[in-house]
Amino acid sequence: MNISERQGRARRATLTGIAGKLVLFAVKGAIGVASGSIALVSDALNSLVDVVTSVAIWYSVRVADREPDLDHPFGHQRAETIAALGVAIFTAILGFEIGRAAVERLISGPQPIEFVGWAAGALVLSIMGSMGLAWYFRRRGEELESPAILASAVDSEYDIWSSLAALVGVSAAGLGFPVIDPVAGIIVGVWIVWGGYRFGRKNIDYLMGKSPGQELVDRIHSLALGIVGVHGVHDVRAHYVGHRIHVEVHVEVDQELPTRRSHDVGGSVRATIERLSGVDRAFIHVDPVPASTLAVETLARIERAASDAYSTYAEQHAERPQLAALWNALAAAAQARADRLDVVRRLKGAGWHFADDELAAERIERRWARAEAAAQEARDGGRSIDRALDVALEMEGREARADFARATTPRDPTLMTSLEGSSPPPPARSAMLERARAARESLGAGPGSDRLRRLVGELAGGAEPPGG
Image 1: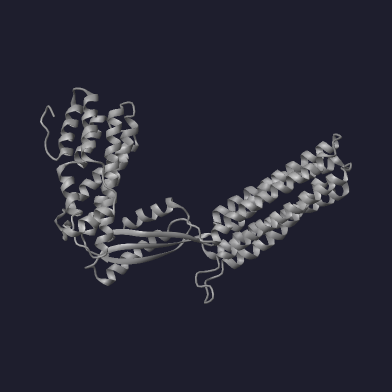
Image 2 (image 1 turned 90 degrees about the vertical axis):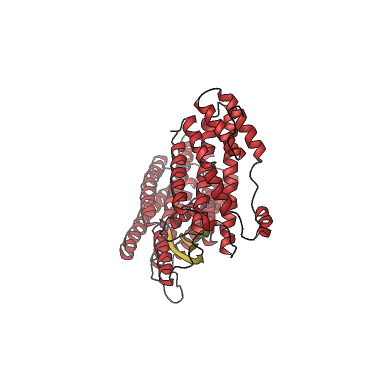
């Protein structure tokens, strides 16, 4: 959707709201004054303030869609957030005034209401009109990603409840309980103040640059890592600028890559991230690193996938406590290895040298494909005990252990102590062996027991004899 089309739809949405709320104000105001219902007059004033705020929103939408200029190089999107905050403030003030007037009426003594039928009819019309406007604003606000229009949707939803409370008060007064009318006015006021507070807090978060959440950050990390030429991703940060999101990402590329190619890789990452819904701009920092960093990053991904698979196996085999305990221990060990590899990757970027130049990239990629498939199949519930143990035998086998040792062994042995102190230690080998043997005993004879015997041998660092 281009800018002119968005502007046109946003203007039509706000003008529709202004027209609808003007009609509701006129009807409720006239009948409220004639009937003497404080609840109906309060609801009419609510519609009047809605008209004023809708005009502010209409103007803010026009401002927000202006092209960036010298004074506002990143655009004017915050205008909608400011307008939405204004709506929240005006809504809260209105709610307070309505509540105050209702309390004064309650203290001075309730008064009879005239034209109860007309007053009730006006409130039914208000409820139906607010429902229609709320649906329309919600649809348009989500379509245009406009917090200002979404603010109008929320406001219209609160109008439904305030009109319903007023209807209860008017109906009760018509049945001979006039005291309910100012009580309904108080309820309307409190409800409106609460609505203004909730929506105001949300838009303050926008203005303060709140993070959109870890789920989006993880999604950005995954997308950036999938771009050809990216060896690693770190320091992913995202925050709101108005109602849109700005992202900052550091991507690692081969230090031998030509500058132009590095620039192209960064551009591909930027374009991919900016296609995400809600993201306005992505700022990419390209960090040159040794080519072997990709292998270390892949090993870390393998360990994280293995940890996820093991955790899922533990849930699936919960009816066998000894086997579930083994899976949980394996999951903790794999996660500890992933954390150690993350530290190695950062240290390589800082100039440390490791023995990872001996790693075979193709072999690691094949293991990554199998680990990813195993994690997905585990989530889908498709792994038997025997097949799950086959995954463990590969992920905990000699080849995997050797690759991990190469990737985490610094060329300068004196640095090993610092590396170990920078990442959590894995579970003790003795505890792992004890759990593997207990799981084997719980399974009894059969293929699963044989696989566990072999797993015990792998965990022990060598083949264990049949009776071990």
